[in-house]
Amino acid sequence: ASLFQRARHAKPSLVAVRTARGEVFGGFVTSEWEPQTGYFGTGECFLWKKLQSGQYSNIPDSSSCCSFSKYTWTHSNSFFMYCQENCFGMGGGGGHFGFFVGDMMEH
Image 1 (cartoon, rainbow, N blue to C red):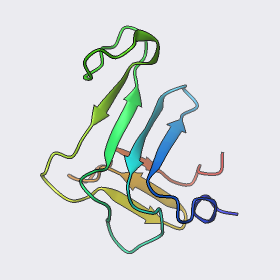
Image 2 (cartoon, helix red, strand yellow):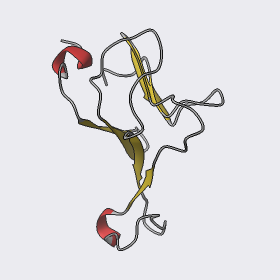
Image 3 (cartoon, rainbow, N blue to C red):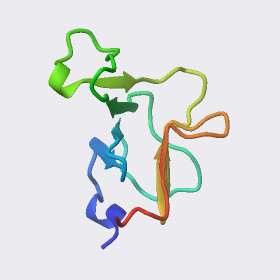
Image 4 (cartoon, rainbow, N blue to C red):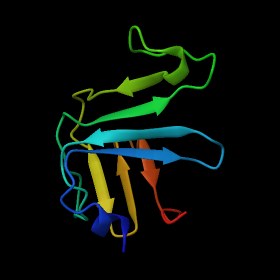
């Protein structure tokens, strides 16, 4: 089953991605992940990333063992969520995504 079939009707949801280099990041969404023709979602969505040791969080009083930064809606566009059968992303704008997961989704 695909990621989208497994996550069907799951909303809200928290997405977490770990790269081969050990980076951990993701997003919180209030809409269902379902392939669509364009961007969708709401301003409640946000991106986050786990900080490496020595980096500082933008969230006051965060624990040093589990520090992360949160990136909320800037109000400059409405490119919250993007989803096709073989890829998904969040935080679009200016020709870039906050994160985009493509052909390596199954790994």
